[in-house]
Amino acid sequence: MKKLFIMFIGLAFTLTMISSCATESENVALGTAAGAAIGASVSHDKWKGAVIGGIIGAVAGEAYHQIQQQAINEAVAKQQPVAYQRQTNKGWERVEADPISNQYYNPSRHTTCQKVHVRIIENGRLVKDRIKEVCKGTKETDEY
Image (tube, rainbow, N blue to C red; front, side, top):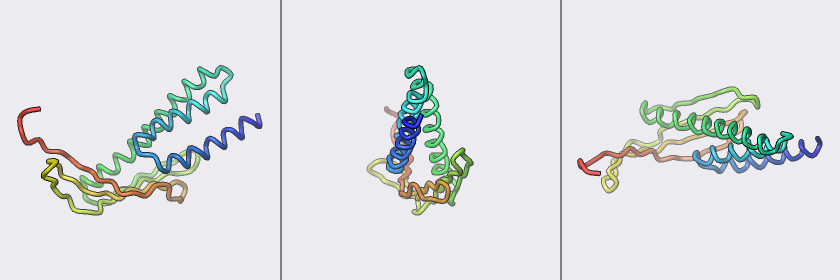
């Protein structure tokens, strides 16, 4: 039991450090891997534990990604800062999205873009802080 606890703490520490650098699409893969590893380590049937843990981890990773995307898209649409906060079993998480530039048109790519400042805060500690560029394309012809 002591080994299991130490392994779990080590895995949680590693995943926290990795997730602070991960892109949104990597959150799902990271959640799946973490869930599978934890599920396999705590279950008597390793394969069953890995599958169930992987599914739960993937759902959690996707939820995390969706909350970030919703905040970013809403900030661009409303042209004002947006924040979402939720309670978790570890405390609270907050996603803040703040548009920091005016929308601009990129004629070579036929897109309208805008930069958004995104911050992820967990229990009062800043976990991610970066600038994202959100672009929407326009169709110029009737061909694909």
